[in-house]
Length: 596
Image (cartoon, rainbow, N blue to C red; front, side):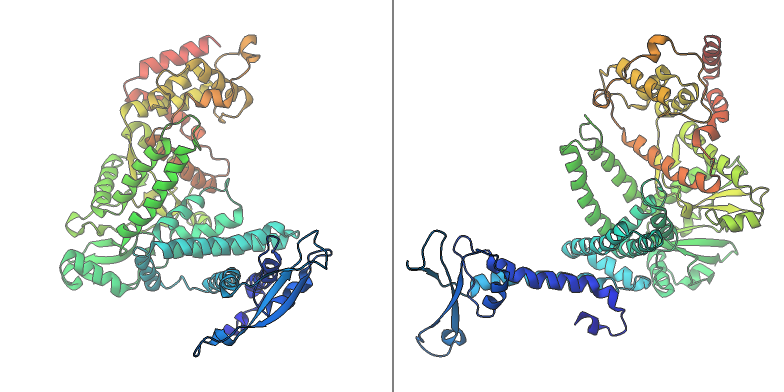
């Protein structure tokens, strides 16, 4: 029946719906057989179905028909013939009277409802796979409707998980490697569709996962990368309408030229090219409708998840409200991301921070054409950093770009104390007109600030890993706020020393400044539980970890041998000097070398 609803659809694709229908059909007689406590089904069509399912030695089922006397006028069920199922309890001989239970339509309905639920669920899951997510206006309307219908959003989430899960399960069970890869690719494509269908928050989640090949298979990473800059765009007419409403003038009074075709579309908005009245070429970022309402809905659900993680102490052993605090700060950053005035401020700050570095480009902002939902910036075209073929063809030095990217983030972490938390490939490009290539940073909606102590701590952690210095690493963790008050530092130090010794924590730039003593070599490390109870994760460090994770994905893409610490280690002494700690640093390095 389902296949006939869409004659052009391939039969194998409706197989899961058919299986679900078959399971529902089998469930009815199975439930009818569950009469161990004396319950029975009152339905004539059910009894023939129930009989074949009786196991050998099961209690005898026999039909007895009884007329229901009519007590008055016309109700259809009053003249119906009801079927009663008689059951002989165990241990009762055939000569003894049977117990007769007459049960009416209520139990029949109770048994039929699971069938109906299965069939409807299968139909919804099957039909949902056909929804077109390439129509940006339709998706925009769907996202806006979800803001008012949280139950529908939850149902869409569950149905989407089922659709992806079916294909992923088939891939996992497949024995042929070629078929397995094809099914994983198909599951990745379906995951992209489901994340787009659910809206901006889930698209952000997909963007993060696309930078983590260590978490999911390559087939999923390749498909999820499309979320970085290939989210469906809404129409140019809608963009013009938003612009005119936000800036209070017709578009022809604001710009001499305006292209209705977007340059790129992202989870929160899309970018259009235009020319100002005074002749400047600009890129205009126009925000999608109802973003705040969708964030309110999604982040409220994530609040509950964070509370459960803290309640059951999941993730950070011994932490108290760690996830709640992290998510509280994350929400602040996410809400600031949909305020384009805040993004304009971040962009201007980054532009000032990097104005003396010619190998980095940050677009200038036009404040007079910017408000909460519209951001107008200098037009800075470039080649996508993920388009390696084009970069090589245009003469870019990929290894140099990867090193420069790492050093740019080292300066953000340890010199400027202000960093972009979202360096995925969709937010990075390369100006190949500059010798070797110049990095272009886009999208400063997500940014985080670090204290001076945390800047020092990050710098010291890098140096301690290079030197295999566990004691210095513990001191750095204290500066970062990662040690709880009253923590036993010796326990943490022994754990770090063991990680250095076993190679769990290391870098290509690591070199031990002194040899371990026999006692240190034979030292038994503390258990993980014993160490973790002294540690905590400040919210700012969670965003540092996220930025480094996404940064690592880009760095390894440019240079398979890339490593963050190795790339930035030569720059550490210079930053130590800039922070006024050059003498202390040089003295410490000399002492470590002398005691080696």
